[in-house]
Amino acid sequence: MTNHIHEQTGIEVSEDNIQSASDIQNWENQPIALNNADDNIIEELVEIVVENDENETDEVDYSGFTRNEMTDRLRQLLDNGDIDTVREEIDAIKFHFYRKLKLEQDLKLAEYLEAGGNEQEFVVEEDEQETIFKNLFSRYREIRNLQNEQLEAEKQKNLEEKLKIIEELKNLAKGSESISETFQQFRSLQNRWRAIGLVPQSEVKNLWDTYHHFVELFYDYIKINKDLRDLDFKRNLEAKIELCEKAEALLLESSIVDTFNKLQTYHEQWREIGPVSHETRVEIWDRFKAISSQINKKHQEYFESQKETQFKNKESKEILCVKIEEILQQPLISSSQWMKAVQEIVEIQKLWNTIGHAGKKDNNKLYKRFRSSCDKFFNLKREFTEQKNEEQNNNLQLKQDICVQAEALKDSTDWKATTEEFLQLQNKWKEIGSVPSKHSEQIWKRFRKACNYFFEQKANHYSSVDSEYDNNLKAKRALIEQIKNFEHSDNPKANFEHLKDLQRQWSEIGFVPLKHKKKIQDEYRAAINKQFDALQMNDSERVRLQYKSKIDNILAEPKSRGKLNQERDWLMRRRHQLQNDLTVWENNIGFFSKSKKSEAMVANVQRMIEQGKTEMKELEEKIRIIDSASKE
View 1: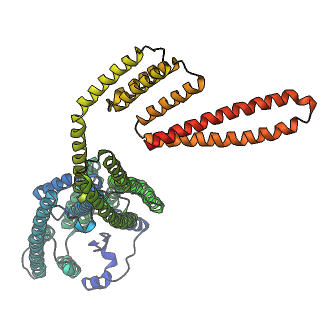
View 2: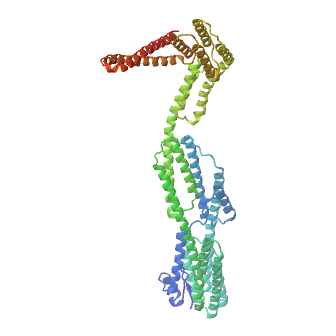
């Protein structure tokens, strides 16, 4: 009885199920009756393949790599690796490299716009790292194209070799050699068949069916005896034991993905090996199945761990998406608010770049959501910037107008009035907002040049009068000493005139340095007032002279006109109020005089009236003194 291997499952089927070689084709198209153990084996094999398809992903997460590290890794793969086995890894490197490059370019654009740049004028600088990466990737494509061509040619060559083997299998049944020699030729053909690599995919099934068809015909033809069959079983058992040992050794490897892929290769090799004896068939399969189950379990646990990590990455990325969407809902009005928001967005983008893959199902969806929110934000930022640019252009025109005014004033020698005008222009300048950055320094230099020129000329002018101010200070100090040392004669009027002359001399002396102005003025007033107090005159005359001295002092101060007006206004208000009071008192005196019991009150009111009239005369005299001083 000869055993056969089902092409799709690798399950051995005995001759009891196949009546003749002519039934092989029918058997290939019929359901195979398997026991429960065989059903479980098929389910586990299918489960492994399905899990591999669902969980296949990059072993290395390149989202945390720098672009420089990814370039080095690509170079290493091209120098050391088999391009066909690292194709998916290279595709992952390319995806993450250009994703990171795009994020970096977006950050540069954001910083450029925040600095006041125009998006239409933004130029992406040539990136040296990208150039190196492009050259490496071009080399990869060349190698891959060459390998693909070589692989297709090799597949075609392998197809031709296998067709030759099938022809030789046909001729084995026609040979006249001994059964032993014929079987050795058959075994050699089988080994050659197994050693030949891949064939074009379109030819696989037909080639496999044809090969097995003639293998079965060969077994029927030679009616292999039990000894040779047992020898074949023994060799097949040894080959399967070797595969079990190789599979068991996989448990020591660190990469579960590589381990799983190698196991799939061993399953393919298991299919290629012929049947074993009935007594050892279940035992050897159970051994191979057991180690396959362990590796599959580790593989499943590994990808469950990957799924857990990817789920956490998914949650982290969702949080970042929400943060950006919340920023989009904020009312951003001022440049400072936009600047703060841009900084927040940039930090979020940097944080996003550190988070790994979120799984095939969600990663692209989250990235599109994140990218869409970022794009929306920077579009709004661009609109704000365009509006801001328009405002800045208007501000530029306003500042240019101020520059024209400043340049027209810079040669003026009316130091006081022009200084006031320049201060007003400077205040207006501060009130106007910013201008386009490319004009900011230029327009500021223009305005500052006009201001500096005027104030330098003013400083030069006043530096020339510093010595004069020092002389005036010495003269006023000497005059104060003269006032202090003045000795009164017996003629009060002559004394008064002399004091007035001293006052006139004081007024004729010019300005003194500003830091000495208050002190010297206070010393003068104290000295002159003391001398006026010593005059032998009646009180009213003394008050009049002292007040006139006060007015003369006011006239010697800056802004004297305004101070005189304030003084006169106060006197007029007091005069008006006193006049009203006198009218009330005089009316009341008539009312109180009718009562005999109000003599004391009447006397008090009468005294108030007299004092009021005296004060009224003093007020009118002071007003007259101010009016006289104003005319002078």
